[in-house]
Amino acid sequence: MRQMPDELTLHAASDPDRIPARTLYGIARLRQEVFVVEQDCVYLDLDGRDLEPGTVQFWAEDAVGTIAATLRVLAEDEQEPGLRAIGRVATAPEWRGRGVAAVLLDAAIAECAGHPILIHAQSYLTEWYSRFGFAASGPEFVEDGIPHTPMRIG
Image (cartoon, one colour):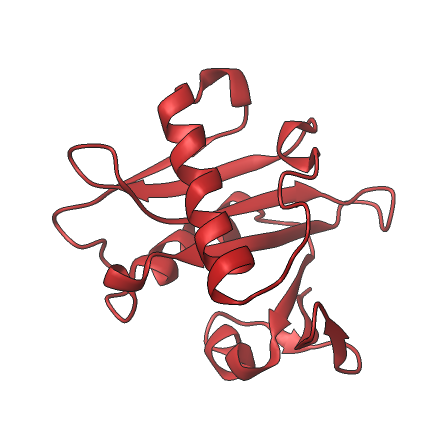
């Protein structure tokens, strides 16, 4: 069983109204720092999907509320009945390599129990995602200039 670093606490919420505003801000800020600034992808990260019914937000934060890592689970029933998608997996640079994203991913997979799960993995991370049971499920594609590979469990 993977363990969260002692300084961090794992949280999950399926109702965005139950997430404190400062926490939502921290989650959005981290996603912007990683995806828009660090990876140089200009796109609208706040796409409305965080507010959809069935979305579950996961995050790890320290004692003062700084977000160390985050991801979200989406219900993709319109694409395929029962399908769940894990996305927006982001870890602050100072927390990378310490197992934080792995703990969040384990929690997200557990949340999806009994459902097929899709992830569009950045291709350089396919081996890492395979450790959680994901397998490539389609050809590589480029999104925002970054190679991605669709992967699934179930």
